[in-house]
Length: 309
Image (cartoon, rainbow, N blue to C red; front, side):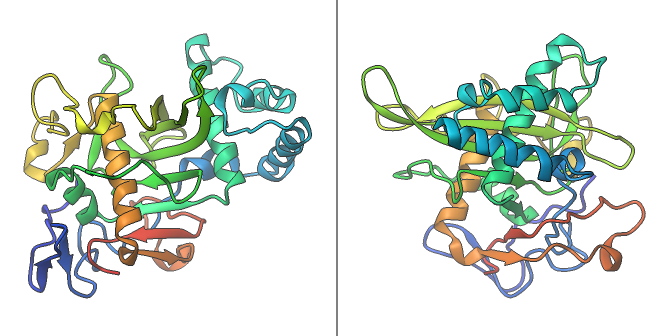
C-alpha cells in the first residue's frame, strides 16, 4: 500500500499556465515521501534477460540478421519471422508453458529486444506526476503521439496502479509499460505509427516472475486518438476497485483504453515538460537497497518529476 496521497500542492507549490502543479525544490519525491527519491526499481528486462550471457549473445545475432535482410525488427510481424528470433525465444519459454501463454512470451521477447536495441531507455514517474496524470486529466489537445525513443520502459510508482490479467485472477500492482513504435503505411498509402505496448504486473520479492498483458494501437492523421474517449462504460477512468483502496488513493486499470490513455499522458508530459525530466545513474544498490523494499535497478534512468526540474 502507498503512503498518504500527494497532489503536489503543499508549501511552495504553484501552478504553471498549462495547469501542471509546480513544486519548489525537492518537495516532489523528497526522502520520506511515498515515492522516496524516485529511484528506479528492478525492471522486468533485468529479471528476464540480464543474467548470464543471453543479452550479449542473442540480441546482437538477431540485429545482425535483421540488418542483413533489410528488416525493421520494430515491426512486430517481421520480428517474428526472423530465424534467429524464432530459435532464440525457445530459450525463455518454459517447457511446461501452456499454449495460451506463448503469445505473451513472444510479446515480451519482442519488446525486450527493441528495448536493448534502443539503449535500454528507462523512465521512472514520480508519484506526484502519476497522480497529476490521473487527477488532472490532461486532454492532450493538439498533441501528436510521439516517444523520446522508439522503444522504452515507463515505470510507475510502486503499488499505486492495480490491474489483472483476467476477470478470475486477483489484481496485481502494475510495474510499468514497455512501449515500442514503428512507422507504417496502409494499403491506401496513408502513413501511420504502430504502437505496441506491454503492461507488466506483479513484480515483488515474493514472486520469481511477473505477468504481462500485450496490446497495440495505431496513431496518425485521420485516426481518432483512443486516449480522448472514456476508458470505461461505467465509472471514472482509473477509479479504484480494490476493497479499501480508495483510503490509500489507489488506482485501477480495467481496460486497454485506460492503459493507453495513461501511457499517452505520460509520454505527453515527458515531451512537454523537459525541464522535469532528468537523467540519473543506476542506484547505488548497497547504499539504498533494504530488506523488504523493492530491489533497485542496475540501469541508468530518466526521472520524471512534477515541477522539480
